[in-house]
Each structure stands twice: as structure tokens, then as C-alpha cells.
Image 1 (cartoon, rainbow, N blue to C red):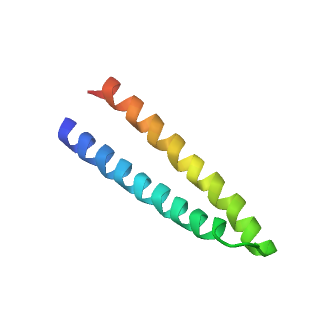
Image 2: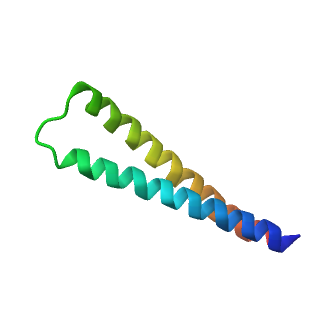
Amino acid sequence: MDEIQDSTLSEELNRLQAEHHHYAQRLEELLQKPYLSVEEQLEEVRLKKLKLHAKDLMFALEHRAPAVA
């Protein structure tokens, strides 16, 4: 049972890390532009929120893991 939880937790952390990385890459692309359209500005704000949310979830899962074990 613990192995299944560890595997699921690890998979979820990997998924969140991949999402966080994807958001960071897209933000970097936007920041390289000298000017952002209104849509790109909205995307930037949305990506920052999504990136922070993914980081918060990773933090919560990482700090919950030792208590479960």
C-alpha cells in the first residue's frame, strides 16, 4: 500500500514539476519580447499564477510525504 502511495506521490510531483517547467519556459519566451500584446500580457499574468500554484502544490506534497511514511 505504501509503495502505491509513494509511486502516486512521485508521479504527481513529476507532473507538477513538468507543468512548472512548461510555465517557466513560456514566461521566459514572453519576457524576451520587447512588447507584449494585451493577450500576451493576460497570458503572462495567468502563467505566473499557474506556475505559483504548481509550486505551492509541490511544496505541500513534499512536506506531506514524510508524515505519510
